[in-house]
Amino acid sequence: IPKKTATTPQLPKKDDVVKDDKTSVKVEVSDVKKKEVKYKEPANKKAKTVSIPATVKINGVTYKVTKIADNAFKNNKTVTKVTVGSNIKTIGKNAFYKCTKLKTVKIGKNVTTIGSNAFKGCKKLKTIKITSTKLTSKTVSKKAFKGLTKATTIKVPKKKLKAYKKLFKQKGLSSKVKVKGY
Image: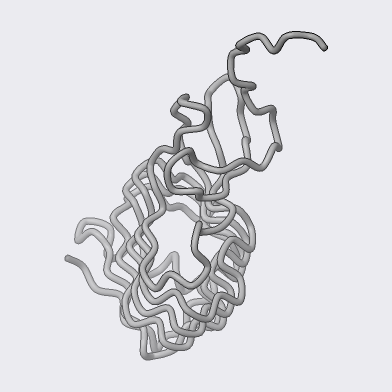
């Protein structure tokens, strides 16, 4: 029988789906060199409040969480509040699609891209607070805000209020949804 030798932990490869050492959050490796991962799903699918971390540790190595993967919370019927970490740049397609209990989303300052139907079917969504000033017509999908109702208020940085109001309308936001500066 060969002796077991101590080996260094295996580092994940691109597209590997792995769990954070401590929290068991599922992430998918998107860039090995830059140590970037996509957030796939919460550790506990029944959690009501979810904070998407800025970083995760995999085998003791820190990775930046730069994207919420497509469909990450799709059809999640329990989550009510989501805070998007400061390293997130992209919110994937259908990320929060039909999260029927979701009430509050806080979007981090580095988000540049919001995918199609990201918030579609979130009937109870009261507040989306966007701290990012980096959204543009090229980076926000045509249907990013489709399906939001007058129950929703989108809070945006004051200096971006005019630009974002126009941008979000172009991207499928109903005129009944209030966009306010803070």
